[in-house]
Amino acid sequence: MPETKLPHPQGAVCWLDTLLSGQDQLLSFYQPLLGWSGGANPEDPNRYAVQTVGGKAVAGVGFMPPGEPLMPWTGYFAVNEVDATVPRIEALGGQVVVAGMEAPEVGRFAHAIDPTGAAFGMWQAGPFPGFEAEAEPGCLYWFELVTTDGKAAADFYGALLDVEIQRMDMPQPPGAYWTLHVGGEPRAGIFQVDQVAVPHWRPYFQVRDVDATVDAAGEAGARVTEPVADTPYGRMAALFDPLGNEFKVATPPPGQ
Image 1 (cartoon, one colour):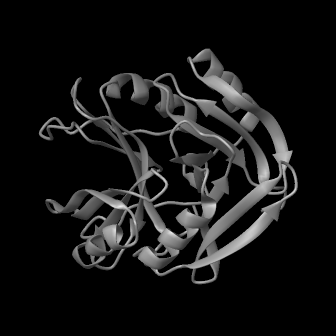
Image 2 (spheres, rainbow, N blue to C red):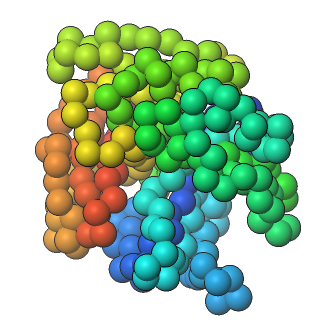
Image 3 (spheres, one colour):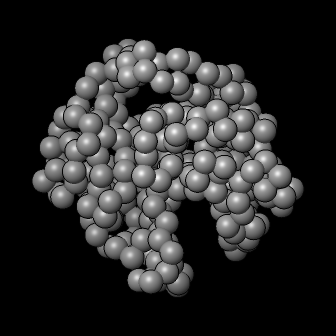
């Protein structure tokens, strides 16, 4: 497994989790599909279950009681100081949902909504840095915002996270795409579309075999929204899991 450089630098996507009432169903779906393992912490009211690949943390799946606000897949951006960053969210047109809060003996986090309506998190690492593995099956492959106002989102995240923003035009389908760069490397993308029910960030998970994974996901209750296809960035497909969370699966291009 490639060595992951820690701590994650300011502005990089450093963690991914979800809190839903169907935690057991979600774990039953993703664990065999992505090779995850990890049970819930019975002492945690959210029964938070850190998922691992090869013993290294790659995602979190928690429990939210029925009637409470649910949290679909949410990505966290690394920040050096949560409490110094939160006040800038509203000044840049976003909305603070959870101001800086301590995760005891783990780190500090915040939740917010960007100016286009997409939810995201921020993470100030304590003993727990976030992702402990990358570039392996079961790990986050890419993280992408789907929104109708890519420019507003790009301006917001660039200013909030102090990251470089690059734009590229997309001929097929026509539109625009922005990438967030940290240390000269692309770390996340912003995809502008004509329509979306709710702007949102969606994860891409790396798998060994996209075709086999899509077949297995369908048998487990997932719905395919974009069939398997080859792209310059790898072989990919898009799905909704049995609880309605959008995600993609991908394998890198040959030679990577």
